[in-house]
Length: 222
Figure (cartoon, rainbow, N blue to C red):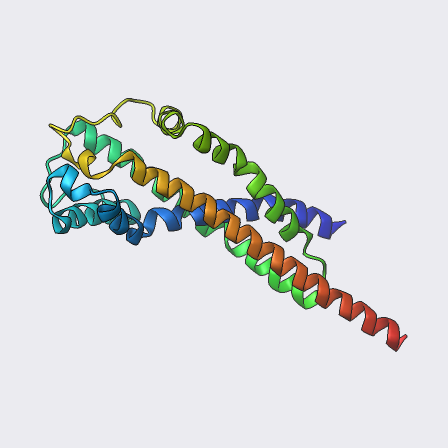
């Protein structure tokens, strides 16, 4: 009974870990944006050099990732008061996912070790691997059907104002952050969740094999 209750807690916690890890890793992985600078011709379309674009993007990501950095300052780009407020809200989202990641990681990790040593079936891994992709499949379908609508809907749900609607004249950073880049981020998040879920399924299958061999060995001894 205790094991079943524990697994009922472990499933949602593990799912939160998978989702937060995929989101945070994507947001923190600068090479995706570096690739898009050339792939999306951001330098040509924005009028800024690739070096300048990188410097300003790095400043933005470093600000969002650091819990201790309170002020965002772009090396070469001006920023309006509304833009500053919006990026402060974006930073809160970054830190929220980091908090979920840090808080959710220990429990599944400890459970895997304990279950493995005791040769218990890790059913929580199986259910997490099945339910997490199922949960985010709706997001994937919405993105595939209408990315523009999904992009707008996300902002309307997450932000309580319209400060995300930048004016290039006062917040030129928007010229180096095309919507397609965020589409690539969404695709990477979904791909990472799929990979993570497959990894959990593989661990569950391996633990089931080990558990099966242990049971066979015990039967032979008896």
